[in-house]
Amino acid sequence: MEIFLDTANITEISHILRWGIVDGITTNQKIFQNEKGVDPLTRVQEICKMVYPRPVSVESNGTSLEEILSDARKFSKISDNVVAKVAMTGNGNGLEAISILSGEGIKTNCTIMMNLNQLILATKAGATYASLFYNRAKDSGEDPIQTIKQFTSWNCSNGYKTRLIVGSIRSLNDVSNVAAAGADIITIPYKIMMSMPYHKKTEETIQEFDMAWKDFLSGAAHHKTNSK
Ligand code: E4P
Image 1 (cartoon, helix red, strand yellow):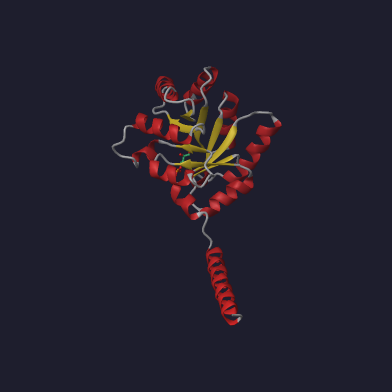
Image 2 (spheres, rainbow, N blue to C red):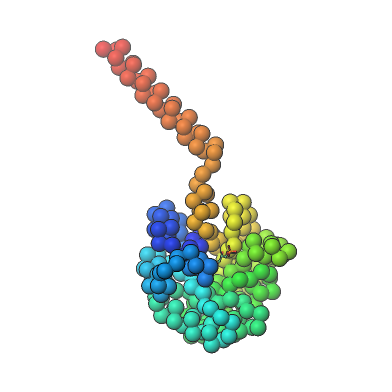
């Protein structure tokens, strides 16, 4: 399973990159909203360079075929690790765009999907990645854990190469549930990522071991003094 970071923030990316666990980056328009004042193309270029050759998803705007294709082609020219993120629009234009982009050799991430039918269509249209929105799906009454299991099995038995990204992660439990369900990739916001290494009992045990070492060292020093 791979871990992507769901952010466009340079400080966040450079911090978590140092942990050695980041396999890629996902962004969207709301994520860029948090980066007020930056030039989006320059920021994408900067992120692509930082994480190269790992993939960086950048989302097209609009719902017409022309708008989607124009953004996707523009973004994918920035660097060869850009993945064109295309929404599963209800009018089918997202699928058409993915089919065209895939024919042009542009990697795609079909996004904002809530159920198995949408994932199947994205896969058949040639998406490199298919993004299921875990909590937004739950909000709308879907069962994303079941969707992850069903899609993984369908994808494998039909021999497709599309990789399932699960996003819209809001808690530590979401991460473990999605991983256990068999997602190929989880994209995690910085705040959740930052709380993943922590466990209260781990911290207590570290303290206990540190104290034991100090006690051991003072015992050794005492022994040395007495044996002089
Ligand atoms: C994934 O690709 C999306 O960028 C993200 O996970 C969406 O999350 P949200 O539901 O918090 O907007």
